[in-house]
Image (cartoon, rainbow, N blue to C red; front, side, top):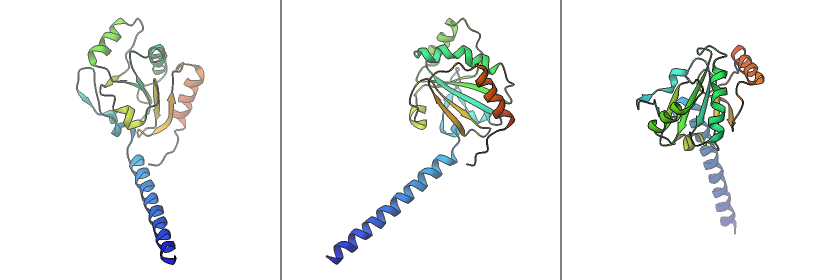
Length: 179
C-alpha cells in the first residue's frame, strides 16, 4: 500500500513538473514572436513581403475577404481613418485571407470608393491557424514593434471620432509592453 501511494505521489509531481514546463515553453514561444514574424504574405504581384517594414509606428492589421459583407462595408472607413494620420505614426494594413490576387484585383476594380491602403495576400489562409482568428473581419492593433495591443473581431466604423481620438491617444502615449 505504501509503494502505491509513493508511486502516485511521484506521478503527480512529474505531471505537475511537465505542466509547468509546457506552460513556460508556450509562453516563451508566443512572447518572442511579433505578429509580423508569424505571418507570411505576398503583395498583389505575388512577391513575398516582410511585414516588419511597418515597425516603428502604430499599425492596424485588418484581415478580410471579398466574400465577407462586413469586411467590404468597413473598407471605406479604414481608408478614411488612415487619411487622418501620417503613415509614419499610424498605418492601416489589409491582409486578404484565402483568396488569389486575381480575385482581389477584380474586387478593387469594381469598387467605387477611393482605396490606396497596402493590401497583402495570405492566399492559403495560414493566419487563421497562426493567430487563432475567430471571425471575419478581424483586426489587430499593433505597437511599434509588432506586438498586439488589442484584437478586434467584427466590423467597425473605423473613422468614428472616438476611434480617431483613441489612435491619437495611443500615438501620443504608447503603451509599454515587454516581450
